Image 1 (cartoon, rainbow, N blue to C red):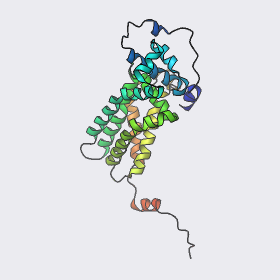
Image 2: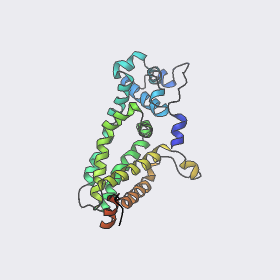
Image 3: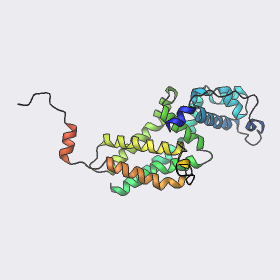
Image 4: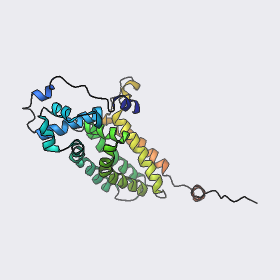
Length: 251
């Protein structure tokens, strides 16, 4: 995944000599405010926040340059508006998580928590509307650019804490700091799946990149990893790992 991003991130876009085909046929999308949002989402996902100009967004959307600022303000406000627009996907995951946490802790709860974490994202990635947004989130989480840090913290940190609490709850005897590690590892697996297309070559073209049909495999993979990380440890091992070596010499 890192090679994919490193080759494309913040590479200056070529200035187009004429408007895109999308700009010519404006009658198909009369909502110009939405056109601007979708154009920005696409270009930010493909080239990175810093490599895209307001003029390029206007060209992609097929609107006058002044309309971008009129509807969405400055560039960083437009970036924020993209995540505000997709707030419903975070809410869906949290709603599914609340249902998953009902009942007794254990393997069944863990499976439901992981499904709530994975399945909405894969469904979003497979949709025409959500493809670029999923790629944008993966890119910004990977690079953590200054422009994205606050947006990601506002939109995703509360959800992350909720999932970490749920993983901790689902695995009795576990430690919340370990649940935070497990969540981080799970995020890595999910982001790699939705952003890396090498699986098509590695499977000799029998698999499709970001295929939602792979969801059960990804759920099982993350579930097994989380269960292993959060397996209850013997009391002696826990005490030993949490103790610090004494600096005093032994007699």
